[in-house]
Length: 317
Ligand SMILES: Cc1ncc(C[n+]2csc(CCOP(=O)(O)OP(=O)(O)O)c2C)c(N)n1
Ligand SMILES: [Mg+2]
Image (cartoon, rainbow, N blue to C red; front, side, top):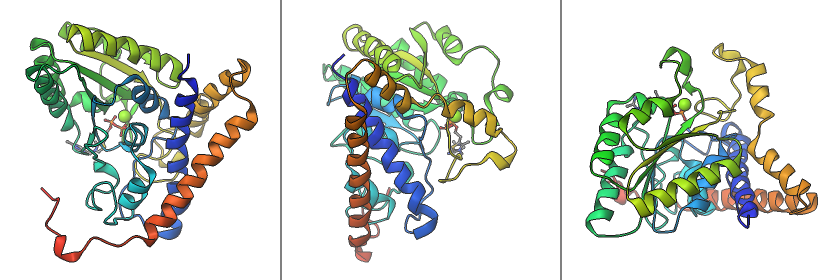
């Protein structure tokens, strides 16, 4: 597959940006915004971005860095936004959890489930305008517990709308495990009761996620029906913030270590090396490229002007 290098590059783009946040967040105190990191979950956003076409639109939630960066979001707008600067992607108003850039088709809001009906509405507009674009709603395992998820799925199926529902099941809602919140059957099986195609995939195997999205997107684009993909993955860092949280008592270090062993970047790197598609030197170079770009974008953000005080009420709804 030609896209393997792109998938690795996008996962590294996300990982290096978030490692920069880990490095500077507490030390510099320049990012005055809560940050929900996707370290360990990069495969979902990277696979989605490679499988979509530029006109497709993605609507996501609080854990939005990965989707934004993968869907062509730029580092400078990202770091400037996290530092509250005027050149941020949302003019310094949004911070980490509302990354929105219509020019690349990404919209985020941290109110759980809030963007799901907006995705469905966008899909309805594509139908009414007879466009071939599709809408994607990305959300976590806890967000399927919100009433608006059920309403949105029901509407999308009934009206035959081109929506890809992507559930990033990382097994937790902040500190509550899935097992105390939902029945034991898999999410994708319960959602299938709405009479549309649903599937579950290993969310840390980027090639499998990419294949699942490719199939789903082909179906959605040409059959004009929704599709649901549950990606099984894991959040390696704390729910919000840059640290590890083994000491909070809700999960063990052993559990985190087990998932670190399934790192999607390490897995794809090994495949690319084993199949002689990339050498270790090439992989290291790609990693260094993004690390350097993250350094530069953060430095530039700190030198960028704050929003003008007189513009305080602009861009705010
Ligand atoms: C309507 C609403 N209720 C509660 C919250 C507080 N909250 C923020 S993130 C979160 C957990 C979300 O879990 P999940 O959907 O699985 O996403 P994850 O954080 O695991 O990626 C909660 C309860 C919120 N933002 N919005
Ligand atoms: Mg979750």
